[in-house]
Length: 463
Image 1 (cartoon, rainbow, N blue to C red):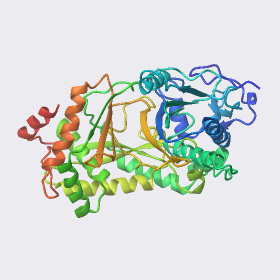
Image 2: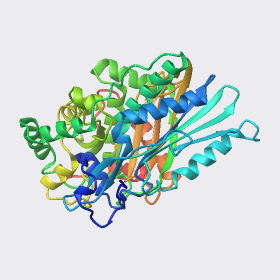
Image 3: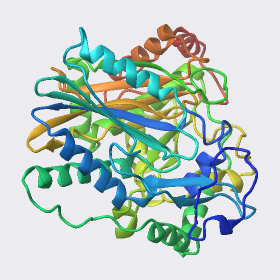
Image 4: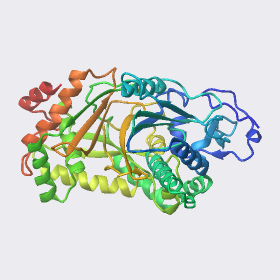
């Protein structure tokens, strides 16, 4: 039976067209309702893995096919019905017979890596085929024992947590096949169980408690300040910049974490909040913090889409110390984790803000997962992120770095709101905060009621 096309604005089809169709999770509905429509190339994540060692392409393709077959969410197509969007699984053919895997041996090319990267860049601009699956793989051989494994997936069918489950399962299956063994049974739960679990959450006391928490936290907050000074619709591409944190600042961060019972990411989150307040002259800062939105065994075992972005509200008072702001950050993040399942779309509704109204959060900050140590039959498979969806303003990612300092900051900025030079200025401003602020340093940022002229001029200098 053909599956209806998942095009934004497409005519509704009867639910009977796919009798086993499932409703969407709240996070999937966010993507479906997005301003640009779910078929836009912005709503995707992609990375490649650099595999350093021997690999058997035939067994690797089998491992991919088996993993995809075990993860029904990855095979879903989404379509409109009179009862709202629904999703239904496709049958995916074997590698070489329709499975979305591109393979190329580039060892004889003048620059194998450049050619592979050019293919990836071009693929990121291509919409997924109508009627086909919302994921794509590629495997490039760029050396005798060096390979690039490219993975691209639409946000409608998989989030960060789910992608992690998939890549680990692929490695597990490949290792077994390479050793001539039967792969272990699938560890994945069913997508229907994930959707039922979310429905149960929405009918629970926890959902009510989460709604009360977020309404109280954000209810009387004005629109969050943004570093760009203005807003624009989400961009399909992003300006990107990344830099290792200088060694002396890494040591400063280490001192703060040791003395204040905070992580490096929490210290940098507080520093970003202070930088936003300095730059905008606004004391009430609202950062966006991505959360997996998963609690309990069902959500943790099913690849799918539950990711959430929730507000972290910080009040930057002139006479508070940096230690106070870090503590405020730590407590705010703990509360966000306790209430991380509450959908952002529901919060917008609670606050009377439409799906395409003003953003609830300003700049985003996330902690990159530490190196997962993934191997394929003993060969290291190093992750290299390429993109992670549309950019609203500025997104900062903090994570370990293999260089001398051991800590890295990567930024993605809206290309219509920032220039490359301005993006670097904000990175420098974040470093300025870390260089200037010890635990007992007063924040010295003007509040909303009164502004100190000296500090405002300093804020303008950061613009």
